[in-house]
Figure 1 (tube, helix red, strand yellow):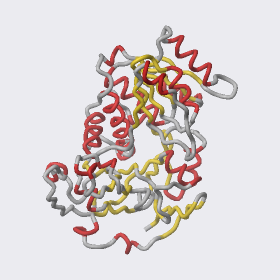
Figure 2 (figure 1 turned 90 degrees about the vertical axis):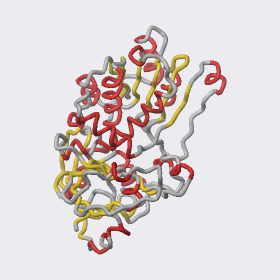
Figure 3 (figure 1 turned 180 degrees about the vertical axis):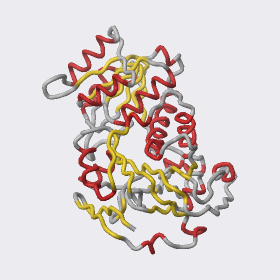
Figure 4 (figure 1 turned 90 degrees about the horizontal axis):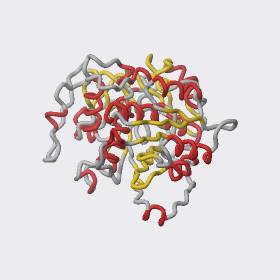
Length: 372
């Protein structure tokens, strides 16, 4: 099969690989999926340029996957908390599927509680196991056992289905936010720090789920214009010639009559976002750290400020299969989530370098590899 194999920073090789490492009895090795489409995440670019502590090279990157199931799963589970029959309904040979890229150990305390994304021995398709920048990918047994391979309705295209997984990750953040915000969301002001695809998915969720007032802070003009088109109540540009963290804080406070943001979502790896989130936070507000940051970076936070202003600083990471299911329903029911609007570029697998460059240089929104 053809695959784009990551070996080390700045070293991805497009090559033919023997499918032998994907073969094996499906009951032990999981099931085989033929790729239909795979989106390029900013994480993939970060790994390509810098490597990552989670990545075990050589490995095929790519975790935002839509594919065709080449064999029916034959999975049984002794775990009473897993409804495998319900999850695997529709998983037959030829079915179109998306997946949760998490590969849990199923033996730790977090797995016991169904929090598979927090597994203490977590593996991930596209990081520690081969992912979707290839013609085929094998989905391991433990992912199948948690219902991590999900059939798709015919109403969703291959391309938009690649964004189901990032949508589920954003939905995970909103579930976390909900647990800290008891008041009516429609009366809240959201500020999304980051104008990339993830920031724009957060924007769509805030609007579709809550009808909230949403501001988007970003650096790229065409992405901010996309945010306007998607219903942002205000967009604020941050850049060398326009806007600084201090001026952004001032502008948000002016737009909220001095109150600030009820909910701030950090959807960018830019460390300035922490300063801005702290500066715009209203009393009794929530700051969700969605994006990972460069290693060995830190941010100072005054504990008295957190205490006396009743600030909730939370994080969210990845998603569970249940959230993948919920995300499919959100999109299929056309409840204000338009994933197609996030996709701006399409590439072939042999254009992997172009796809990574488009993503790295912010030339569009999401790039999808749709020809293998």
